[in-house]
Length: 126
Image (cartoon, rainbow, N blue to C red; front, side):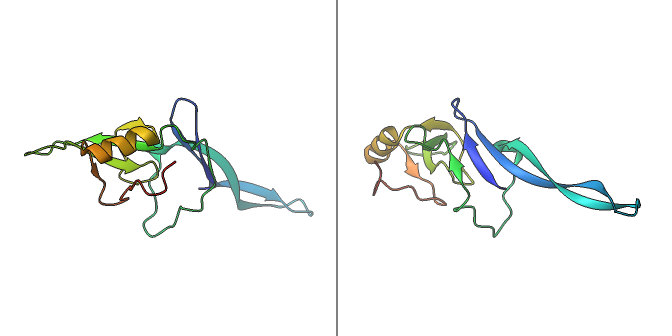
């Protein structure tokens, strides 16, 4: 992956580079097969992170204060809450996008539990 972009509708897109077959014509006229880096753009739901890779330094565009968090409805039995809060970059993130203010309020009210993977916390939230 080269970068990721969030469009105005809230969807994430990954800009990647695929190595596709190509040919190179040598100065003497002979051709030989080579791999050619080719830019491609994919919707985030079509991309699977590679285990062990760090994507925290991946350039990100469109990740401004709106819709930074996701609230996932759970099928949990027992007492509430029945929803889990994820940071936008969490690999387990699912559910509806919410603003930073709404996420902080839901967490403070006990309406959601924090994801056990990304552990979103209100410290430092704008």
